Amino acid sequence: MTAELPVRYCRPKSEFKFDIADIQNFVYDMSRCIKCKGCTWVDHTYMPGARFMTRCPSAAMYKFDAYGAYGKMRIGHAMAEGLLEWNEKALEVVYACTLCGACDVGCKRNLDLEIELALESLRVKAVQDGVGPMPAHKKIARNIEQYHNSFGAEPDKRRAWMPEGIAPAEKADVLYFAGCSASYTNAEIARATVKILQAAGIDFMLMPEEWCCGNILFSVGLLDQARELARRNLEEVRRTGAKILLVSCAEGYRMWKVDVPKMLEISTEELGFKVVHLVELVDEKLKDGALTFKKPLSSRVTYHDACSLGRLSDPWIPYEGKRGWMGCVEPRLKRRRGTQGVYAQPRDILKAIPAVELVEMPRMRENAFCCGAGRGTKEAFPEFAAWAAAQRMEEVREIGAETLVTACPWCKNNFARAIKASADDVQVQDISEVICAALEG
Ligand code: SF4
Ligand code: SF4
Image (cartoon, rainbow, N blue to C red; front, side, top):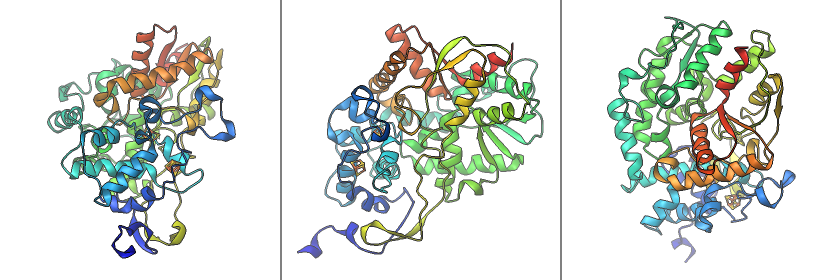
């Protein structure tokens, strides 16, 4: 009787690797979810009270267990075992999730289950099974294929953001990868970034032909297309000889640092260059004296940790091994727990600006509540994205902040929409704009 049951996940010494192309690699993780809901609640070591105690936007919005990581793990497990077929609702549950990683770090507080990888793999399976991604995602994929950007904008307008009087170098150690958002919809971020580089006396170059980083393709499970793009992009960057790949977008940061190596089965270190977010570079330059803030910013400021710059940005190390009883793995596996995220640098930068009063939201760092925009959510589930941003704005209101700062165009735009809808008296700015203004005193 037992032999007939789908007990693959119980087998000792089962081989597995961190390969999201095959969901069987994560059957153990999905099957071992004990539905404790530790992934839903903010760490109890600093539980900020009943009002802001949840960290999963999906479970909080849809108020049904299927939408939490525990529900998705059961759906994924049943599908991997061939016990459940796709249907409209299952597809919605799998995609109405911001892949924010809050459940992953929450689960690893008690159990070492690979929830984020299982969620990614489930989307890859949806595509492999011919049901995913959502229609809105397919449109973005077509844009990327045709125009090499997610918006379907003219490729020859990609560098239109470049401010007058600043010219990229032919050859430099720093390669600035602006990404689709800063190139087309948030040119203020790209402009501020190169002005900061100029102020710090740093030469920079651009890619001969910059294409989309592939974030949405990867995030919605279009793995083959995302991998092909990653290969092309990596080759192009290596060809420039850059030592530093500079980004000003949190999603691009995670993509380059974690998901490009993940797809190509190499480690972050093996990329051959360092992936650096603007806040890391500015923090360093402030501390070594190359940059100084002159202009005060008299405001009560709070900082929103973008998921992809925080808990999702631990370096990637490929893994292949065996799993024994009780989930013990061999060889030793260094888990990514979101502890190496870029948390301190943006805060140190803001604190260095004269007259800034930095106040923290109850949910921060690894426990930050996602803005709701990323990983294909805003495009496929705009009401969910708007709802999540509105939830986060309640925290901003609670602490009386006047300026909300983030380090990602996706977060900035989603918060801007929420502020407009609620007529809140709060301004949202990308940290590049704040830095630039403080330098231009
Ligand atoms: S995903 Fe992890 S933390 Fe969440 S319910 Fe399952 S076992 Fe608990
Ligand atoms: S990734 Fe984020 S939204 Fe999705 S289930 Fe986990 S905590 Fe919820």
